Length: 182
Image (cartoon, rainbow, N blue to C red; front, side, top):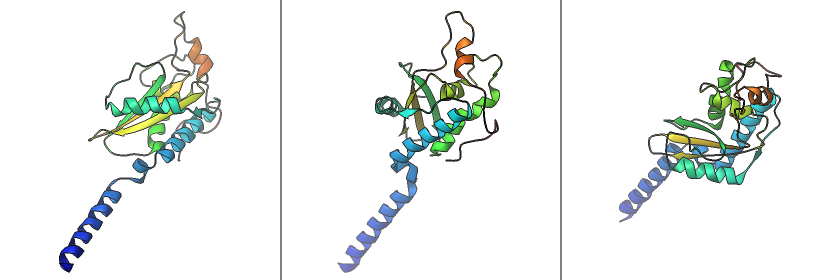
């Protein structure tokens, strides 16, 4: 009986340790995720002369609901939106850097929307003031969703790139290949 109880306790302890060690710390700490996503976003924004964003709980809730749907497509909702998918748990810095490193492809002379730079332009869009992000474990991949208000990547009625020139600033400090280290 003693051996059986000790064995059961040992097995339960191993299962508990395995469960804890197999889940990365970041997946259990949503406040850290939120803080690092905001810090990283504001790091890029400061490099491009845009004001810091504040966190918005309603945008986070919207992002969380959409992330849990586990769809690899934009929601077509009312907000600006950046998505990222990983087959493993990365880090908030890796997600923000995925968005930010697109700046090396952006044409600051002409502006305009391009699929290869849309995450970056939303990230630093000057008219944006609030954000909220969330993630969901979708079994074989992680779904990262960020929502922004005021939405970026807006085209003018005239069809020119005026809004891009007004809202996506040139880099004012650092190197274009710098990445957030948070």
